[in-house]
Each structure stands twice: as structure tokens, then as C-alpha cells.
Amino acid sequence: MTADPSEAVDRAAIAADFERARVTLHEFLDGASAIDFERNSSGTRWTNEQLLFHMVFGYMVVRRLLVLVRVFARLPDGASRVFALALNATTPVFDEVNYRGSCLAARVFDRRRMGRRCDRVIASLQRRLADESEAALHRGMHFPARWDPFFAEYMTLEQVYRYPGRHFDFHRNQLTLG
Image (tube, rainbow, N blue to C red; front, side):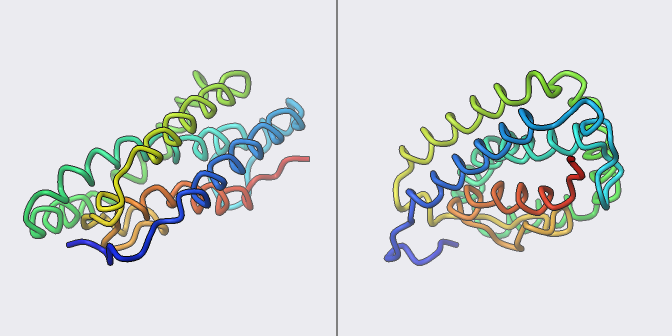
């Protein structure tokens, strides 16, 4: 399956959204106090620091999703449909791994390191986006929509590039920074 290849992807808008999130993250990191980082976020089990890492992780995971979409887009449609159904069946396990993984990873990529990590990941995504063919951006695969409210049943490569900004903004509203 592919999206309408006659519509050009607005790469500049995607790139600008990457940069907006990167700058916003640095503003949070520079403006928050130690107490702010340790405070519980709103509506999650994470502290603000853990949630900030999880927001960065949204960009990190896109690099892996790009590979999956490229592979599954070349296979029969049913392959990604079965894959997505199997992943949806593991949603409770995924939710726990997602929570605990961000808790642990925030210890390594803490407030002092996550900004640099974010910079590198977004720079990598910017380069990949610039190099994508228009046809590739319109190819897609089925996704485990139960895993994330911003995963659709079927997503194109373009939609995967747009995903982390939506994820970032959703969680941004859960931060309880001073």
C-alpha cells in the first residue's frame, strides 16, 4: 500500500517541527531546577526528568521505525498487518517495558546528557528526511495502534517522520516544571 504519490511531502514543515521540539527541550532542560526534574509529572507514573527522556525517546524510536517501514513496505500488505496484530497482542507487556525502560534510560541520559542525545538524534533524522525519495515517503505499513495514541492502523514514512512531534507535544502538556 502507498499513499497518493502525487502530493509532495512538506519536508520543510517536518524539519521545522524537529527543530522546534529540539529548542523546546533545551529550554526545559535549561530552565528547570533539580526539584522540577524530580517532581511527578501529571497523568503519568514518571517524574519530569523521566518524562523528558521519554519525549526524546520518541525521536530515537523513529530511527528504528524508518527501517521497519522500509522493509515492510516492500513485502505483501498482509505481512505488516500480521506483524501489527501480533504486536497489539503484547500491549500490556509493551506498556510496562515502555514505562520501566524510560525510568532506567533517564538514569543514563539524564538532564545533563539528554539534550546532546536529542541534538544528535534530530540531526540524524533531518539528514535522513532530506535524503528520502518522494516515493519512499508515501510507502507505509500497518502499525500496532494500541501501542501509542499517535500510531494509526496504517502509517506512511511521512507519517512516521511526523509522529515524534505529536508525541512530544502530548507529553509536553504533562510536564509539571516550575
